Image 1 (cartoon, rainbow, N blue to C red):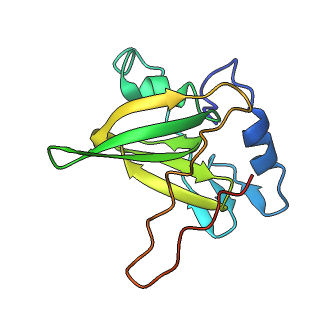
Image 2 (cartoon, rainbow, N blue to C red):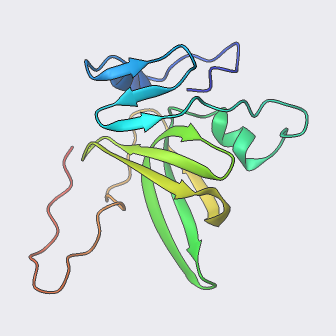
Amino acid sequence: MDMSRKDARPTPAMRRLINRTDFQEYEDGSRRLDNFNIPAQQPFDTEDMEGTLQAILARNVGQYVVVEFLLGTEQLTRKQGILFLVGRNYVTLYDEAVNNFLVCDLFAVKFVYFYMPGARPPYNYNLLPPAPGEGPRPPRRR
C-alpha cells in the first residue's frame, strides 16, 4: 500500500493479504508474504513525480487491474491482479486466484484497466497456454 499518502486506506483485497498469518511487516516498511520479500513502497507523491505513471499507479495500490504490455513492436500481452507494489521501473501484481506474485516491467506498460470493487475480468490472463503435449487450461477459480 502507498503508505506515503496520509489518506491511504487498504482496499478489501489488500486487507485480506495483510491479515494473512504469513504476512510480516518490518520497521523499514519492507514486508514478507509467503516466500516473497517485498521492499518498502517508494513515495511517488513528489513534485518531480506528479502526473507520472508511477504516481498514478502508486495512488491506486490495492486496486484490481489488467495491465497491457508491449512486447517488441507489435505484440500486446495482458497480466492481471491486485496492484501490490510500484517501483521505479516495475510493478508487482498479486494474482489471488493462484496465490502468485508477478513482477512486471513498468516501461513496457501501455494500458492499465482499473476494475470496480468486486469486478473481475472473465478470463485469467496470467495463465500461460499449455505447452505442446499438455492438456487444456484449467478453468478459472473464483
